[in-house]
Image 1 (cartoon, rainbow, N blue to C red):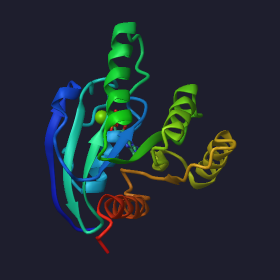
Image 2 (cartoon, rainbow, N blue to C red):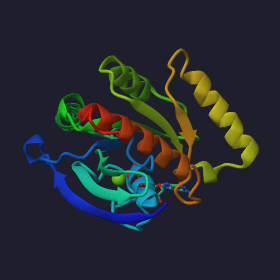
Image 3 (cartoon, rainbow, N blue to C red):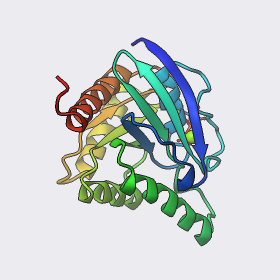
Image 4 (cartoon, rainbow, N blue to C red):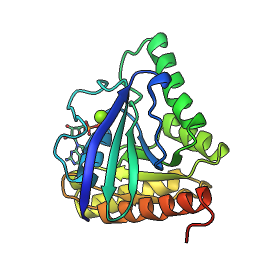
Length: 207
Ligand SMILES: Nc1nc2c(ncn2[C@@H]2O[C@H](COP(=O)(O)OP(=O)(O)O)[C@@H](O)[C@H]2O)c(=O)[nH]1
Ligand SMILES: [Mg+2]
């Protein structure tokens, strides 16, 4: 994959800062430490474009990255993670209003990618989010992260277990490792298909 451009457009603590851009947006969400920033960096082949951290709960802003690649010209959006320990009600409410404010009102949003550590079970946080996205008809994907942490057999078992936990939900899912650069082409393909469909809808004259 050829990346021609990848740069931080803006980091927003509040909705009033969201950029006025016309490009389709792909949003990454998930628990703190699940690997959102790492996956974003792996996709755009930059080491620290999005800041990664071994200590969870640092990102409380929405970061918008402008990206031009062979697959798509789009904006990748790093949403603040949830689920860090000992968080106050006020902090939780501010996360919710920022993230829900973005996801429910952003006309540029064409796809939401929910990340899930392949070693963990889905929690209510994830299933509620998936159902919330489905209710709003937001196109969603589930991406399992950190596949390199498990041996092949163990990984297969975990992926099967996670797929079973999805129950009736028909959400497309794929397995990735940012460290081993696994699953990235597949994810780019999903982004390309989705952004092209979005652009065709936005401009019906476009071939
Ligand atoms: N082994 C391995 N570690 C990863 C992978 N992705 C992320 N990590 C590690 O998990 C931690 C959290 O990653 P980060 O991208 O900051 O998570 P975020 O909070 O969701 O943005 C960091 O220590 C990363 O190095 C991966 O694919 N494999
Ligand atoms: Mg992060």
